[in-house]
Image (cartoon, rainbow, N blue to C red; front, side, top):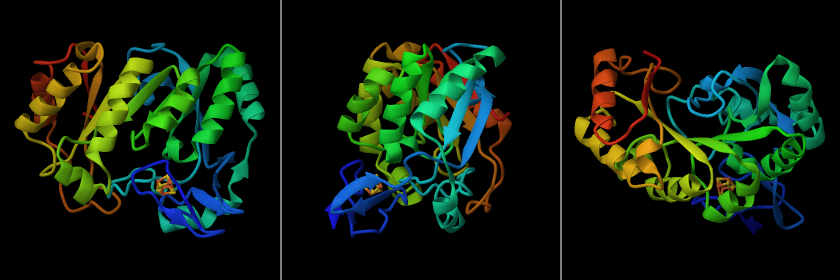
Length: 280
Ligand code: SF4
């Protein structure tokens, strides 16, 4: 048995078993990333898809995902590779890639407009050691590194990655403890601490998915965007406000009204210079 200190779950993991995220395991009494080098998705994407709008605009980025996540968002669009029972059942048969091979692939793809590596699709921080190793080698090759994360990790994890990460898109999924705790199985406090520090270390953009009946009030968007404005250079932190579509375990409500997404974007613009709408 060993305790994992990556996130607030603080899992006590018995030998050979997995923590809550499904990615970390206990080997010889030590917690290790069981998903190290395991790849479930690999694609050369436009960087705007991450989404990042103010970092290498027009560039492509080699995007890699593994398995495992420490949240349980009922609308997860990547559940098939991230944390569902099916995803974890397939985990051990996922293909493996070394950090060096991934960095080399990123460099080879320069000819197709690639600017670097993006760690995305599942939650990369539950396997942060692979991110660190591949990102360091990518830097050696003159590439940039992007982290697409839910921001649910302790600050030492962020500090360990900081020398290698150039930009992040971090989910700020809402601005109430109720939503984070009861609906997402997360911790708003941990995410806020993470974002606060990340904004001092790298280029940061944020994403908020507007879910009907959960986080869709003007008051909540005013509070959220006001808090973002108080970060390091906060008024210039880009905020992506996205439209929800029913899926997975949250099929009980309609897509977010497009007019509401636009209205909330206007509210956010009271505090922030760069507000983008998505999925509209
Ligand atoms: S990263 Fe995974 S194993 Fe570690 S505490 Fe969080 S959920 Fe548990």
